[in-house]
Image 1 (cartoon, rainbow, N blue to C red):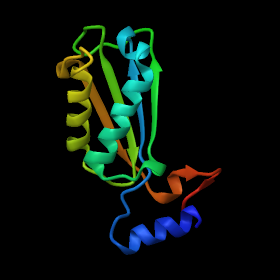
Image 2 (cartoon, helix red, strand yellow; image 1 turned 30 degrees about the vertical axis):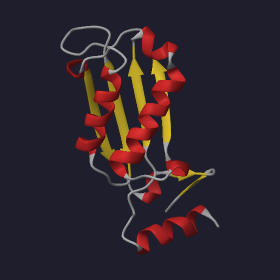
Image 3 (cartoon, rainbow, N blue to C red; image 1 turned 60 degrees about the vertical axis):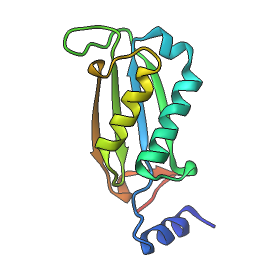
Image 4 (cartoon, helix red, strand yellow; image 1 turned 135 degrees about the vertical axis):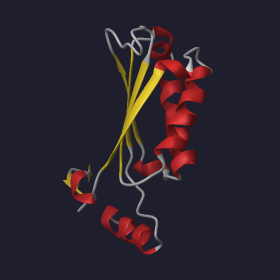
Length: 128
């Protein structure tokens, strides 16, 4: 089954909220040291908070030289590109997961960008 066919099936069922890309920027060494665990936590947050299927979720953890929130280092920025979804539920779940790694929610900021199918590519080509 092609990605286009799978997407069409999701659209017919009213589930066109697919394809999230979540990029996490941080200068917290402890998060970078546990990169696989942190990426898995973010992946699970996307899956549970947005109801996205595993095969469409992409997560990147990027080590930054300096990230500040309210002028304080040891912070996190979460950027989400998705075709639909509830950003409030997602960022809350991610912030709770990061808190388990020693990052207070007050040091987590995020953005959500809703994209169309033509602005998201998979398997080397745009979806729309």
